Structures are given as C-alpha cells and as structure tokens.
Length: 394
Image (cartoon, rainbow, N blue to C red; front, side):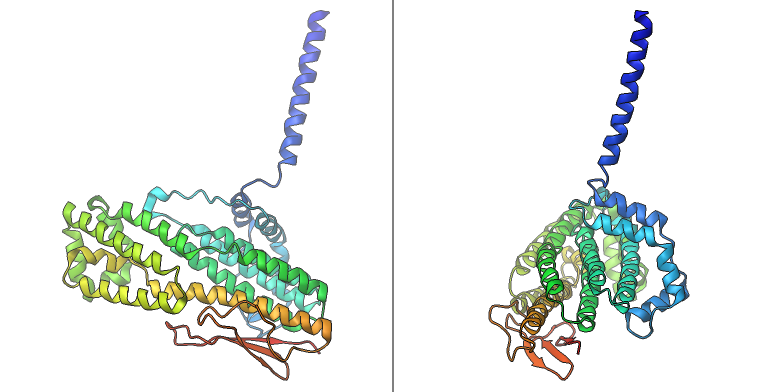
C-alpha cells in the first residue's frame, strides 16, 4: 500500500514538474535574444518573386499604388512580420557570429534583414494609403530597431544598419507628409525617434572591431584568406598585380611590419572619427592619400592600402545618417508648432538638432506645400548638399 502510494506520489510530482516546465517555457516567450526570432522569421519567410519585388520597389518609390500581388505576398509573410516586430522590441541581439573566422566569416543574416525590411516598408506604405498613419510609422520604427540590432560588430554590419535607418527615415518623412495633423501621434513619434537615434550603431565601435579582426588575420598562414577577401575584381586588376605578388611572397617579417603599420593607421582613423565632420574628413582624406603613396615604396603599407576601408566615405555615410535623423526631429518640432497654432513657424525654434555636415542649424524654407530643411554643409565625398522636403496635409 505504501509502495502504491509512493508511486502515485512520484507520478504526481513528475506530472507537476512537467507542467511547471511547460508553463515556464510559455512564460519565457519571447526569448531574451532577438536573433532567435529573426532567424525564425528568415526560415518561414516566403521570398517574393522578382516581379513582386520590382512592384514593391516601385511602391516604395511612389511610382505605383498597392495591388493584389503585393498584398498577397505580405499576407503570406504575415507571421514573418509579426516575428520581426516582436524581435525588434527585445533589447539583446546576439547573432552567434564566429569572429574567429576573420575574413572568412559568412553573414547571410544581413541580406535577409534587408529583404525583411523591404517587406515592412511595403506594409507601411499600404497602411498609410489606408489612413492608418500611426501603424505605418510603427513599421518604420521597427526597421530602425532592426538596424540597431544589426549592430556595430563589423563595418559591413554598420553600413547595412545605416541603409536601414535611411530607408526608415525616408518613409517616416513620406508618412508625415501624408497624414493629417495629429498632435498625439507627433508627440509619440518624437519620443520614439529621440530614443532610437540614441542607440544607433557606432562607426567608431565598428572600426575598433574591424581592427581587432584584421590584426588577427594579417599573418603568413592567412595569405589565401586575405587574397580571397579582396574579391575577383581587385585580384584581376592588373594594376594590383605587383602588390598581390608581394603579399603572396610575404615572409613573417612582412606580415609583422604590416600589422604594425595597419594598427597605427587604424588608430589615427578611429581618433579622427570623434572630430566634427569637416575636421574628420580632412584628416581621413590626408591619411588615405598617405597610405596610397607609401604603399608604392613601403611594403608594410601594401596590405593597409588594400584592407583599410574608404574611411572618408564611411565618415560621410555616418554623418548623413545622423543628419537625416536630426532633420526628422526638427521636422517633428515644426509639425507640432503647426498642430498647436495652425501655422508653420516663420523661423526655426532655438535649440533644435543641427546639420552635422556644417555643425549649424538647418536652413528652413516654407513652401506652398509645406517646408524644406536644407543642410548648410556638403557631403564632401559626393559633393552634394542634402535637402529634406516635408509636406503639410491641407
């Protein structure tokens, strides 16, 4: 009898433990690592056909309105979008990358992130068409959060993140131009944008990580990996033939000297990134010219000339990214004034975010349809001055 009761007690305890474990598992959702849900979203995503992708692109460019094919593709990916939105709200995102692979590291998640972001912009466009502007803006904010999750592990990750930020800000500007005055939504968006832009991936952190990986990879035993990382175009360019031959024949001293030279250059570049745009760009441009010149005479500079990213270009990309964020913040303040007073301000309120290319206030001009915010400084790599146009719904 005692044995039977004992067995029954054990069964009850086992069942209780199973139920408790199941309940804990359910309560633990979502996981504390956003990457788990992103990978799950990638697995179940039904990639649109090329014709639908082209239509989505035209939709994003404002060339067409939404159609049944686009809507069907988005419906097929409804669960994917839900997973993306859940993942974007999770603070931690560890992609499980094996940095020890160095230049041989594969990053398939970056392409998938870009594709899923395009799905979100298509969804945002349709929501905006249907008058649900706050939901459309929320989809754009999801893209921003995804960009922050892409991280600053590598320069390629940083560049993808900035492209996602630009995509989201472009659509935010379009939604703001289409939506009627809504002080509550404007105030809500303003808080979110300030929070998100404060967590944007850092170019400096990405450069530091890139330096760490390259310092480990610049070794004799890694010659094949280094050459492969250069890509076919660079390898097949005859102007690089002499440099490539020196790399192939490089001894331990060659690689030791190359690491020392590379480390010094990257340290100088990283320090320059903390300076205002005009100073930073000038220093980085001079540094790049020096590297290219010395690589013709100093074997230790060859690998740095090949591996060092176009730092001036990356500096401009980062400045453009944060300047667009600042333009959105300024625009929101102007929209708030319009919502409160019924009129656009005659001039910008004091203390608003700056054009980071010049370090000055944006140039503000009222137009018949709304207003334009213009940078006062140029993107020196593109020789272009950016303008951000915003419309006001009549």
